[in-house]
Image: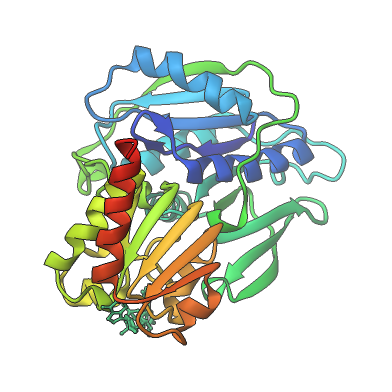
Length: 345
Ligand SMILES: Cc1cc2nc3c(=O)[nH]c(=O)nc-3n(C[C@H](O)[C@H](O)[C@H](O)COP(=O)(O)OP(=O)(O)OC[C@H]3O[C@@H](n4cnc5c(N)ncnc54)[C@H](O)[C@@H]3O)c2cc1C
């Protein structure tokens, strides 16, 4: 098998962003008539055995034929993760010759979601292997012998570029807001493998040992509901009602850049061109004007509701539903109504 996909975890499940990457990787594997191998790094504090029991079923429904569960790295460590991927890629060996393949070229690829972690790991993988990395892909197919035809986003998704990638192996990240997760039409069983990685101290120079749920990153990128707050929230304390609402809806809080610049919330919560790209079912944008750089991060939301005192704000004109009003009045009313409904009142 020669197409690998990095599967990031979000709590106990595979992150939605990775299921989207897996969907694109499956199409590539089918074109190349190769297997699709998922690479999973176990979360800190979990034992290998239960994880091996759980993930193969979920990943197999998305078309994975093999699952490599890597131990030896406790938590997120971008260079160590890249080292593991480089070793798996090397162990897969050169691609057998076939129709349209130049020896050792087409058919070898590593795909990851275009999340902060996915992009960082793939950049390290490119540095370790000397292979070119192509970010923000929305479609990949075989071009002429040995090369891949790639459509990818540029300028925060405002432009689509057609490119040809001719490399011994393709390193790709996926613009997750542009690819929907789709189950495999005819999934088979997946074979699970354990990989014990021995890493050097140098590979662990950057390492996250804790990943609190809802702290941004993968959780924000994969949340089904995001409650967004902008300058209109007015202060760090003003976010209490947004956090309460997000809690009631089982979602995450996202913010505009003004909020991070003001120091009201950390950059890990920023949505936009220079923040996280979100793809929720519902984005509730409160006190956010909807600048193009913010919209670049939330355009993948299925539904947008905007709350703003200015009915002509771009976010209001682009939203599915627009509420003209002060968010400090609208949100408490919404929370009260949701609480009443939860109590059956
Ligand atoms: C290179 C570059 C990259 C950038 N990347 C990003 C990015 O990734 N993400 C991002 O968000 N921005 C980004 N920006 C910044 C972006 O251009 C905007 O400045 C920013 O998004 C505006 O944030 P805002 O909507 O919170 O603030 P504002 O534009 O000031 O809008 C505040 C809104 O709140 C409304 N409001 C005020 N009070 C209330 C109230 N009580 N109730 C309801 N509504 C109220 C106002 O009517 C207004 O529409 C980037 C800019 C550049 C140049």
